[in-house]
Image (cartoon, rainbow, N blue to C red; front, side, top):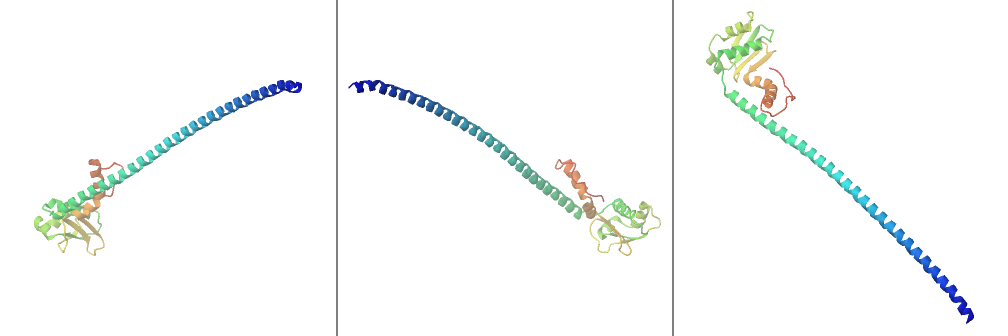
Length: 214
């Protein structure tokens, strides 16, 4: 009995110590758990922010990419539309020139003289359609020589199968030919005319190709 009574304080002390240590362990566990939870929340918030920023950056990149694609496609469609309009204008001009005849002597003389000034030969043939020559009348060669200011010229007027309004100048051997019919002039002038039409109708910028000269 005496032994049992003397052991009771020791047991109580051991139990108290155990309870105290257990409380400390629990408090430490709670503190660590809170730290882990807070760290987890902070990491989760960080990840969400990073993902949000990444998502925003990706959205910006996609937006810029889409806008770039739209701009390119818009430019392509606009260019195609402009080209179609210019082609229709060219076709309309060609159609009108095909129906046109030279009714004025001045036009035929000017076209021939312009070409002759660029040709050194003196023996030349002026080819013109029969319909144009009939409308213009006689004396064409003499007037061309006066206008070209080449008294040494020997001009022959020919209607041998040439078609289209205007004149075609060639030497006797056919080695040099200057086609100054209206359709041929249109073909030579079209690049520059195309640029001017596009500029004047706001279809294209001034820095587009300029084309050649007649």
